[in-house]
Length: 429
Image (cartoon, rainbow, N blue to C red; front, side, top):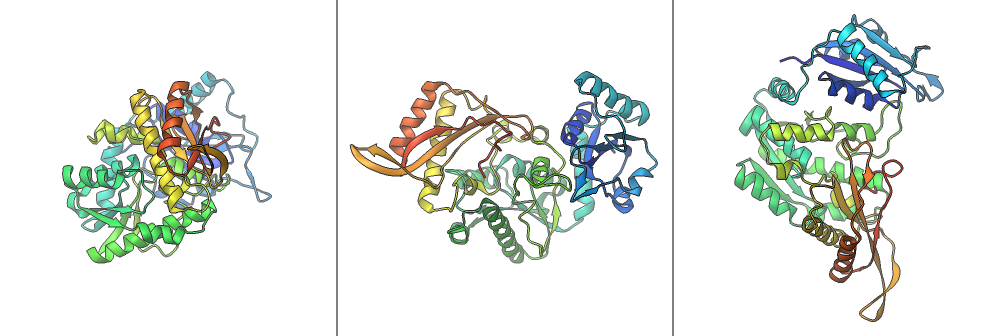
């Protein structure tokens, strides 16, 4: 079933994401697009019922005031201008804003409430089959929520045409490679190729401290590994990725500077040999989870801890060393265990440890130590665009601190990060 669609056009507003989510909550699918959308690009978007020109404080880019393209202004559908050429802004009152959105979406645009996960899955399955035909597809399967949902969606769309490639780059959590192989190869019967590339990645990352450069190296090397595997399989044309909408937003738009590059957005090489398949790229994190449940994935997989594409590489702050990387991995495992025991695992959206490249003086075994600190982070969020800090009982923090400082080599301090997003991001790099 074709879903009606409202386009939110980015003319420098800081409210694009919020407006899109509010319209989706009304049951109408919404996509955010740049101001210079061409007629050809617009023609490829089906069932467009209306366009919102969403102006705002970032409308002047490099000294030039951006304007909506002629194709958008002459699209032949209702247009709602907001801070655009003197049009009134969105009402500050949430109820009034919702009323204005409803009047436009259902009154002027006559859109139907046919946006739901089941329709989304059906549409994506049809689009994937149309795009791929009888060709083969490679999927970067980390075992995280996003790539797991993509795997389930692609299996429904094409079955054995899909080959899942799980790359152990040495930046995964404790026991994760073994778990991925067990679940997807042994239990789900997927075509799974396991690649041990630990030395290959860590050698390239040696001495690299800049977080953007680390992400670029990890993303580029991932593609090279896939290219190697594709040559072994022969005639693989497509690469599937678990890109979701927050990845794209944080990697920057034409009116908003990048927060950070995501390896599957900003880290892709220009000479990519594959055509990309990114069926989740317009979904927020909570929508991805709902999609996974609708596809029949177990809750334990769908609601597992989010994990960044670059893995522990962005939690080992500064230049990565193998010793400090192990400290991140072991301390993270302890944090996971203690949250499970304290019945916090289902109450906290994301929790993990960070080990920065700095040392402090301490005392261990009645002797002076000069070792690293571990930073604990635990946040709650709906869509990963903002996040609040979870208050952890002191006795739990005390237990975690004792275990980490006594069980993890190289660690003599434990700290708790109290910074929400914004001003911080969820991850440290």
